[in-house]
Amino acid sequence: MSILTALARAEAAESGRAQPLTTVRHTHVADRPFVLVPLTLAGEAAAPLAALAGTDPAAPRLLVVANPRDRTQRFEFVAQLARVILSYVDSCARSVDPGQTTRVRYADAPQVLVPNRGGVEFVRLLGRSTRFRRPFGPYPVHRTVPLLGQWLTFLRERADHPGSAMLLAMTEVLGAHWATGQSGLEDANLAALLAWIDPPAGLDGPSAAALAEDPLRSPPAGPSTDPTFDNEILAPALATVSRAGDDHARDRAVAALEAALADQLRPTWDLMWRAVGLLRRRPAGASVEARWGVDRDVFTMYHMSLAEGTALPQPRRDSAVAAAGRLDRLEREQARYDAQRALDDPLVMAEFRLSGEAFTGTVVAASPNRVDTSGKKAALRPHITVQTDDPVRLEPGAQLVSPARLAQQAVVVSVSSVDVVLELSKGMGRSVKNPAPGSVPEVGERVTYGPVTDAYQPPGKFPTREDTPWTHGGPPPEIQPSDLDAQEDWS
Image (cartoon, rainbow, N blue to C red; front, top):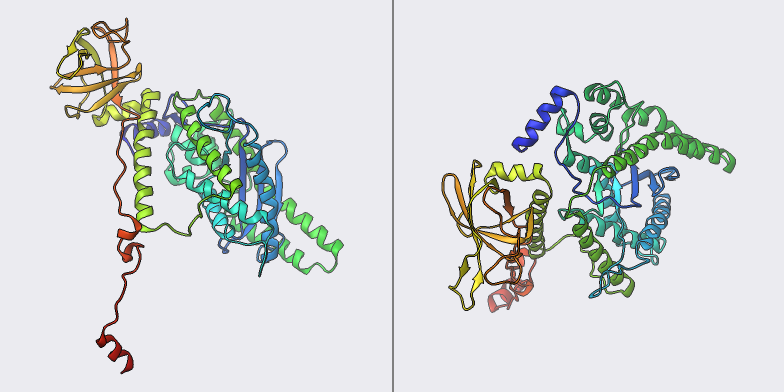
C-alpha cells in the first residue's frame, strides 16, 4: 500500500466516507457492458449452479442448473450461457471503426463485468473445462460449448493485461478509484464496498457497510453461496427436485428453486449496475480511449482468426519460454499503464513525486533558442531549469514528459539539490532556431514532469524452443544407446 493510499484510508476511517484515489476514471466503461453474476455449488470445483447475465439492467437472463452434479445438465447450462455470451460477442463485431484506414478494427469490443475476483476465477475454470470439449465422439456437447470456452479463456487472458477493460472484477475497479476505512478483505465484498462509496442517506460508511454485510439484506456476490442459504434453502430445494415423481411436480420444484436462486442473485445484479452508474459519472482519463483501442484491435484479430480457423491453440499451460515472454510483456505494459495514469491524473502523479520518479516545480531559467550542433544536423534543443522541493531520484539521461505538453520529450541533463536541468525536443514546430510560441515553458511557469508513457523498451531475449533445455519445455535430448545400455537391458 502506498503512502497516499494509506492516508486516504485513514481519512476515510475518520470521516466515515470513502475517499477518492483518482480525479478521473482510468477504466473504460462500455455503453453496453455484459454483466455476469455466477453462483457455484459449494464443495464442487467449477460446478455451476446459476447465473444472472445480460446487458439490460431491467431484464437479466436467469440460468439455473437443477442438478449441478449431473454432467448433462451442467453442459446444458453452459450451452444456454454460450448462446447469451456469443450473441453479445458477435454483436460487437457488426461494424468497423471508420477512423482506421490502415487496418480493420471493430467499432466495439466485448466488456464482461463480474462482481469480484472469484467471478474472474469462475470464467477461467469454466473456459478451461469447456474449450477442449467436442460436439462428437464420447460425451458430446453442443457445438457452441467449446467456442464459449475459447472466448472465456481469451477474456481471462486479457484480464491479466494492465489497462485492459474486457473482463473486469467490479470490486477491483472500485477499489482502484476509492479508498475505504475497512480492510482489503472487506473491500472484496461488493455490497460493503459500495456502502462506503455511496451510502444511503443518513448513514455513514461503517453503518451502511454493517447493514450490507447482513446476508439477508445483501446475499454474497458469488460465486460462493452463503452457508445458511445452502443448508436452509438450497439443499431442501435440490432434494425436492431430485425426488419429484412426475413432470408436473418437477416443474413446480424447479420453479421454486429458480425463485430462491433469483432472490440470491438479484441484489448483486442491482449492485453491479449501481457501480456502473458511479463509474460513468466520473470523467474518463485522456489515455482510456487509446487503451480501449488496443482492446478492440486484439478482439478484432482474435474474432477474425476464429472465423477463418487460423486461431492459435490455447494450451493448458504455457511452456517455460512462453511464460517468461508473457511475464516480460506484462511488466512492460504495467510500466506503460502506470505512466499513462500518472500523466492523466495529478493524484496518481503524486505517487511518482513521492518516490522521486516525477517532480513539480517552477521554471527559473530557460534557453528557448538553444541549438545543438553536435550532430550531423543542427537541431533546436532548448534547456530549462526547474526549481523543485520534491525529492528527485533521476539520473542524467532519464526521459520525461509533461502532462501539459505530451508531444514534447525532456531529457535530464543534471540534477542538483533543488534544480533540475532539462533538454527539450519535439513538439516545438519546424523551425530550427525559433520554437513555436508557448511550446517552451517560460520563466515563472509551474510545470510537472513524469515518466514517459511510450518510451521504447526492448523485449526480453528468450531462447527458441530448439535451444531450450528439455527440463524447461524444449525437445528431449536425442539418446544414442551404447553397448553398455544394451547389456543392461538384457541383464
